[in-house]
Image 1 (spheres, rainbow, N blue to C red):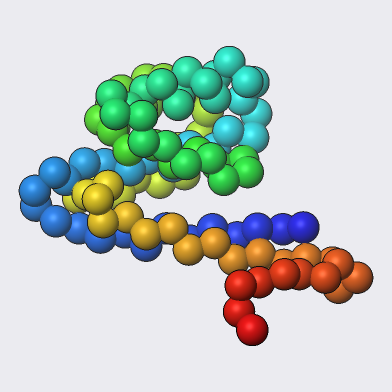
Image 2: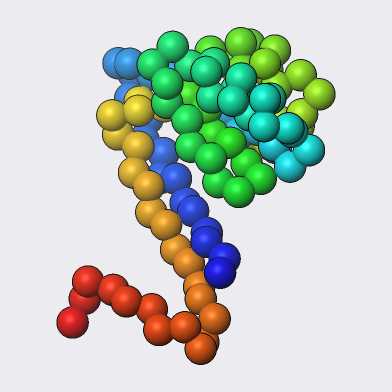
Length: 100
């Protein structure tokens, strides 16, 4: 099963921070856990081989040393982040949804 995740990013002046997306495909478990501890309030989202972390970009970059930075997005207010996940399943699998 493949899952595609789309973060819809909203920008506001108050409480604005930076979201950094890190390539964790070559990271070991200890590196990933260290990155997850980087933000003071603990906001992160792991998406397969990518980890999105909201926090100070210089701190995230330092913690991600040796890993690739896939992108940074300024002006992020965590209170306005919306997660919309899409997925696909094997056609033989019966997918259940809450929709009738």
